Amino acid sequence: MNARTRSRFSATAAMIADMREALEAVLGPISEPVLLPGGASKEAWAVDAGGERLLVRRAGGGVIHRHTLSLRHEFDVLEAAYEAGVKVPRPIAYLEDVDGREAFVMERLEGETIGRRIVREPVANALPLQMAEELAKIHALPPERLPFLEAATIERLVDELDEVGEPHPAIELGLWWLREQRPPDREPVVVHGDFRIGNLVVDESGLVGVLDWEFAHLDDPARDLSFSLVRAWRFGADDLRLGGIGDAEPYLERYNELTGFDVRPDELDYWELAGNVGWAIGCLTQAQRHLRGQDRSVELAILGRLGAEVEYEICHLLEAQGVT
Amino acid sequence: MSERPTPDELTEAIEEFLANEILPTLDDHRLRFRTLVALNALGIVRRELAKLPAEDDAEQRELAARIREGDVPAGTLARVKADVAARLRIDSPRYLDRY
Image (cartoon, rainbow over all chains, first blue to last red):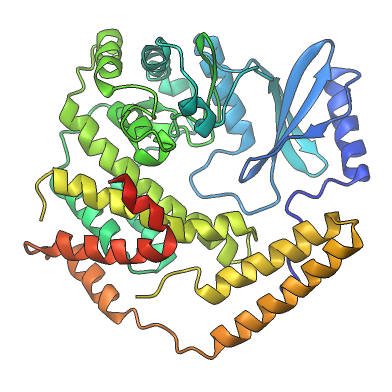
């Protein structure tokens, strides 16, 4: 048995009292904070204050994944998005120290976020177009407002794979094809970086809000546009290429109409494959968090094996491109 | 072909989950007892696994390195896909039905 482990988010009464004090200094009297389930690397606490439903996003105990924003910067991005009219929870306050970790407070939106549930229920017809509309607004955010955002490259994926140190020929084939077939560069824009079903709040009217901005960076807009197409984010509704909820064509058309970027379908194919390669490597790096003892969890551990699903999809997509 | 987590590492992860996340939540004596028995059983599995020779991943390493160099002759994808399918039959057999 491993002595370094303990329950991942053990919330003691003393910790909750300390959190309460830090929050009340900013928000006034609050209800008892309740830890919400889920969240691989961040804690989410529901509290109410001044008649408002709030959510406290607090750093988790584990080691922060490389290339993710600090909560300070994530809060800045959220503010910029909110001011630009992107559908996001209203940002309320950044707190440097909530019982030893940074956190921020935002509005708690009502709606569904669980991908598997969203794709099983009938969704609003408007949802695909609303996703395109939000992306168009995000990609128009002024980069100079967010000077800490870094540019991502395919090479960064190679570095991450090398850090894992395991042989994965299917991922190598994906990277090879991405290098060979790279479309001409587009001017990098501010991207969400994880824009997909599962990170969107959805209700019967459609898209309510875009969550989880920790992967925001500068990139080709087509990459952000294609992330929702990755099969893993269709949550079993494989026939609907756009996140298990719709077809890609009307979404692409609406996005192009709003941005004038004229992204081509073959760019979607390219970046869909890149999204799969990124997630295949992501599965391995998540498993490494467990294996290296940074964040012991059976949930992270098994991702090291479930990555084989994503590798199979990479092979499938390469076949469709005529690779043998 | 070697994959991580190894069978031993996966078993260890289950062991920790039961001991650290489940056991402390159990008030029922029978369930506590059975969980301790399950942990003992997992210990047996781990000691059995420890007797097996480590899997050799030299071939996969060589293939990965060749592809990295851009050496991708026709037929490479078919071979790689068959290897991934073989892993899936262990890791997630029902996934293959989705294609």
